[in-house]
Structure formats: structure tokens, C-alpha cells
Length: 250
Image (cartoon, rainbow, N blue to C red; front, side):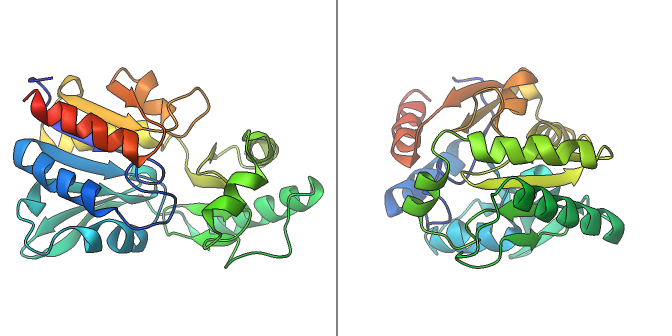
């Protein structure tokens, strides 16, 4: 692992439980990792989620934030820490027409498939600028409810499969445990990793990606398919153990 110059992570169910704050142990390990290599977090959540779930839980004394790369909404946005603030480098935003068509297709297909829930925790549809996200139980649904709703992933896959033909000019993919994400065509986590390589001059073969959905059809799979070295985990405890081993071998 000595040749690795950047380690990239998914966020939900990799660095922290879905929508939950970073555990202090994981936060401390990320700070130690930043001393050794560049670090990227790339996930489907919007930048506000990255701030409350990740950044706000790093030690206030954390240095080397300029070595932390944040790529919300599956890499359709990119932020760097410069001058003491987080600055947006780019955003591949959807047009108003694309957003409207995406939302209409999601609502119609979810209702047709019987997947439109009436008792939810927060909004089901969210406009993240560069991504429209459908969360079956709402944005603030508790982890146990989300786990019980679609344990095999079949429900969200049926929704993705129904919506994709309705939006041939857009990318429709399974997101988190109960979500479907829609972005501009050809944009997924592989796109984000390629842009990261271009903007940092760190080649893909010097990067390592850690995620919980590296299975075919998972939202981390495009990174594996493009040939980046990957490591599969089943939660943040697995990730913490992996980072400790990685640091021990540096």
C-alpha cells in the first residue's frame, strides 16, 4: 500500500451510519490518514450533509484540510478547503427542465409500483442542484426503518428500472438504502474519480477506494469497474479497522 497517494471513501454506511454523524474514533483516524495521504469523500448526499455528518465532527484542531477533497452528489460537485473556507470547484447542475422531468418520472413510477409511501420522515424528493434524489421514506428516516423497507434492494431497483427508460438523456441509478439518484448522463462516481485525477494530477492507479456498495449494481461499483483498486466494507467499523491497518503499513 506504500504507493497509494489518495484514499477515497463513500460516506453513508462506510464512514458513518446512514445520515448519522461521524464516530469520534473514525474522525480521529481520518485526521491521522490526512497526515499520510490525500483523502476524498464521494457520496450521493448534498454538501450540507457532508458538513453536518463529516466536517463538523472532525476535531476543531484538525490541520491538513487542504488535503481533504469533498465530492457530494456522486461527484457532480467538488469542494476544496482554501483560505479557511470550503470553495466549490465545479458543479454539473441539472437544468430546470431536467429536474422537472426527473421528479415527475419518479413520482409517477413510484405510485404505479406501489412504492409511494404516505408516512415519511421529511421530503421524499430532494433537488440537490446537480442531482434529484428520491428517498422512499423521506430524507430523515431512521436507519432501522430504511433497513426494513428494502433489505434486498429489489424495490429501489424496480423503481430505477422503471424510471430509466423515461429519462434516456439522464443517468438513473440506485443510491443509498432506499434511494434512487438522477444526474446528468454519464455522471457517476467513476466520473467523479476521473475528474479528481485530472484536477489533482494524482493518477487513478495511485488511488484506493473504500465503499460498502461495490457489488454489481451498487452505486460504488462504477469505481471498481473503471479499474481503481477497491476495498469492500460492511459499515464504519470495518472501515476503521482497514484504515488502522493501512496506517500501520505506511
